[in-house]
Amino acid sequence: MFDINWGLFLLASLTINSIPGADVVYVTGKYHVKGKKGAALSAAGLAVGYYFYIFLTWLGITAILLSTPSLYLVIQLIGAIYLIWMGKNILQSPPATTIENKEKNNPKKTKHYDFWGGFVISVLNPKVGLFFVSFFPQFITSSNPSYLILILGSVFCLGATFFNVFYCFIFSRLKKLSPNKSHLILGVIPGVILIFLGCLMIYETVSRFYQ
Image (cartoon, rainbow, N blue to C red):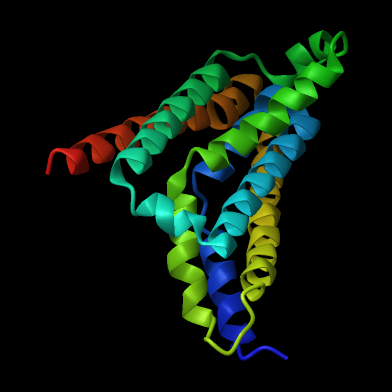
């Protein structure tokens, strides 16, 4: 039906998605401080954020955004600062078992916070849009309809969400360790990594600006 090498696309998508990144670290950290529901809602928010850029790529807006250096710079800096802020929150938050009772008093607010937190992290990372703009055209020819980007994006998004949850499940097995060790691996390390990535993003963005 479509002139596309599905085998190559699926292999490339699975390979890229299987590499743990900031999203995996974020969802894992959320699992530690919010439990399964918090991690699932965060992963769902990230997925909607992916779709946001997939839709913009389909409309061609992402290419326009990337061609506006000043706007791209601002979004990158805001995203980096938000990443640092989320890392700080994960570091300062107690394990899920400690805060679950507090969340019972206001479950809707907590759910919204977890979902939108993941969404904002995706949207404030323009590198996601840059990736989609450069990745999908490798598999689309002029003979294919434009909406094929939405189909490829959906497949890629499902793969990304699967691995976000998969790695979270793998790391959750570490909960069986002593409380101190599990907090270090699931709470402290993800928080530090998010802060480091945010600082690195700021450094790279500012460095490119002054080149």
